Amino acid sequence: MSEPSRLRNLRDPYVAMAFGGWSDAAQAATDALEHLVTTYDADVAFTIDPGDYYDFQTSRPTVALTDDGERHLTWPSTELLVASLPRRDIVVVRGPEPNFRWPQFASSLTSALRSVRPDLAVMLGAMLTENPHTRPVPVMASSQSVAVRERYGAETSQYEGPTGMTGVMSMALHTAGIPVLSLWAGCPHYVANPPNPKATLALVTRLEDVFGEPIDMGDLPARAELWERSVNELAEDDPDVSEYIANRIRQRVKEGLA
Image 1 (cartoon, rainbow, N blue to C red):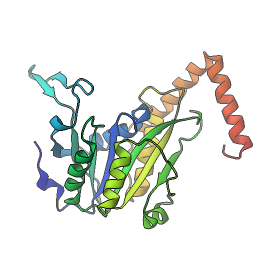
Image 2 (spheres, one colour):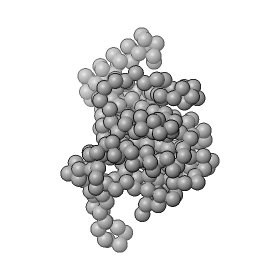
Image 3 (cartoon, rainbow, N blue to C red):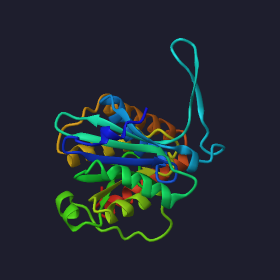
Image 4 (cartoon, one colour):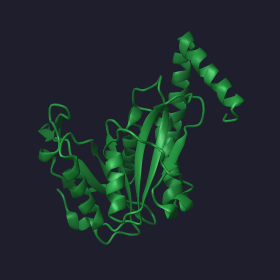
């Protein structure tokens, strides 16, 4: 059940937001939010009515069985949940990227977040890159705000071209006077299928720095290590992938990036 009043009177709140789909390579960004939600038992405070925004043939509802054997239907929607860290509350915004009426969706979500009065909104995304899976995951930070760039070591985004709901909401929140920081993880393009716990761990680690307090990483480090070992084994069986990785590492060493 949605409770809009739960978005008020929070402790030094930040917002963390990600959308599944176009801006979420290997599901790394939404998995980072899922880690916060499950680790800190986040509760749903507000839900945007999905009927006006989703094509249910593209984002289908799901059926699951409850503990007593009853069938439960869940519709795709955008949820706002509150995760309580030791020193501050995090409003987690997650859901599939909407299919319809993006301007109205952005306006509705921005209106809900105004009641939070957050000190910062962090937009999470993930993209496919040429970075080898054996190297540290790059996390690019950008912001339109000079103050945010100076505080978090971010840059001004130079990207021009098609954007997703993550980019739309970044601009909508910035226009509404809410400081925005965008964090994008780079995932190797040759391991595009989810999950990618190494990229998820990189995003959660960066969130820890931004939030200014420790985040319980749980089994993320172990899963990231297992994922890398598994990709190593797959690469050993594929000479083309092995050669690509070796060439990329040599290039990075030559460029002084390794």
